[in-house]
Image (cartoon, rainbow over all chains, first blue to last red; front, side):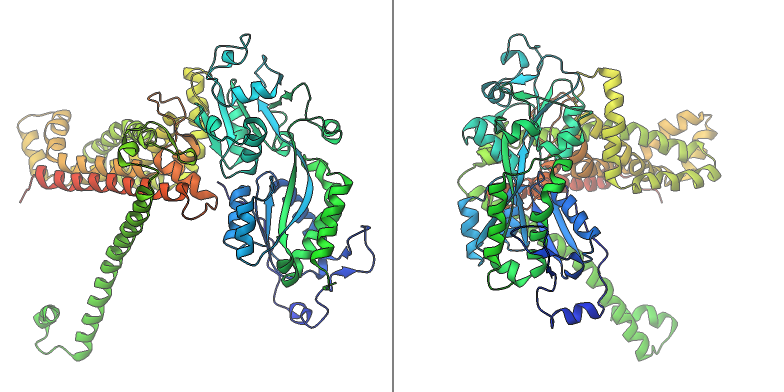
Length: 325
Length: 310
């Protein structure tokens, strides 16, 4: 829904930009690195614009990493649009307009095919883990935990809370869910409804929005409301919302790390080798992102990926840049 | 040839330069007029071809489009009624607010207020119409909705509801109706007024019995222009009316309007040739037809009920 752009003052066309082409393409690579796999990145030397678009779940994390990248000296323009994973792939794979696609679900086969049609072989970078948060209004005192079956009922055929559990009040369930372009929507449909969108979209009193803040506002304002979105949006609004336990497990660092929370899911960023090689600034940004993501991720409201997954993402980067370093 | 008439009135031998200037001016003016027509035709063309794609896709029939009460294109439910109903509800509520307010303000300004007061107030009213609609949207969401909740109960009024959007839209439209109606009232020749006063009528009798009926065509036209503005208004309903189709007549429930749906779906980058994408054009052409019909009606009313004073 809402497009949010983070942009910096455009760097003036001074002599730095003209002679950067004469120097080694990758003048931003440092001799020393904070990472055991990736080379060190000097954001001061990174030139050129970067465009990223996609998941609203990934948005706060990327926003934070961009802020840090800029604080450390990158002075060109990065645009970051929060439009939903599906729309992000539409822009990256089908229209071939953006450099990076943020996603809260893995890329689909038809999106891979579309990307290949545009000469882009998708490379996946695991960024971290989200604990999809199912949230209710703080005034709601009758539910603190739901099973996955109850969750399926709540978001589909049950019109009133009492139809899910007879001890719950006889009041309409007001549903606030991410839009159909959203990776969070797709993930929820897959986990809770076995890939069938129909029940959730047919439910009464359902508000859909690609903008998670609209969902937050909806749940915040209604005692009998329920909604779900990425954990960061709960973390940011934890004073206005309550989060439910799923199958008796509360989302949080411990339950995500030990893999007991049922709705924990990976979040990703996609690009391709040819983009990274043609636009070294994109490669630099991704390397920087992967190097420092774990220092920021908990503060944003998500959880670090396992070491093996993050290392795999870093190795993907090395492979993509082969011969260009 | 027509061009030279004006010039010849003053000068029997217009210079070449003057003729050229007239020609250029005429060219510029007709070019502007033609552009506006071309843009309209272009919009109609795009809307119709894309809407045709939607209806010829085989996934939806015209009958279903106009009779089903469920709208959820992703799972092949294509009934426009919930969206249409919500558009009509918000517009109706807006007119409920803007109609009486607008006409009363117009009567006051035209018949009661001093010229000095009128000269000050009218520009202020027009400023109200110039506030960006997104501001009205947030005003509805953060002021009107909590206000309604306090009056009618927190469990009765949804966070997003058609009443708050309609009221905000009413406030947006009211200056327009007031201003247009005031123009119509002021255009009534003062001879009529004086005659009525001469017969001993009071100010109220003159206003309601003479002036308003005489200006009724202008007032009705103002109402219809206001209504078509309400039908097409997008930002307020997108923010405050709700983001999911809902067939309800309860103004305190959330229900997405036609324009709200278009805004929400086209906000992300949707794939071309998907049903979602084509569905917004079907709604778009339907909206276009509604406002076109309203405008035609308003033209007819002006033509039919206009009292001509010479």
